[in-house]
Image (cartoon, rainbow, N blue to C red; front, side):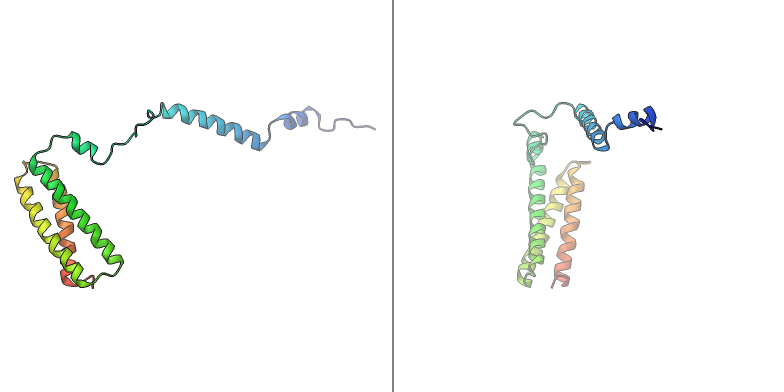
Length: 147
């Protein structure tokens, strides 16, 4: 007895289907097409989709008090960054004390500028946060936490 096709047409149908790798490649192409359609048109060439750091502030109308407060706040944050760098290097107590003095004077100036801001100015909350952080670090320095 001679058997030519022992599994019949079912085996032929399964064998003719795509392999797993081919199916995955097709699915990947479909997903990529869907993703590109969902993204929409990309940003125009030469322009960044994000604004530059000072670009938003420069377009805003700020009072002189707000400008001074922003400047003093940036200076205080820079001092805090410098403090972090010194602490990584195990700085001496004299440089830490000078930063503590600078943080104290900047905090005092920030609080004075805050009183000159209009009622409900959102910058006041930022000034409070910067002042609290700088005063806490000043207290840690003078108490000797970092030495």
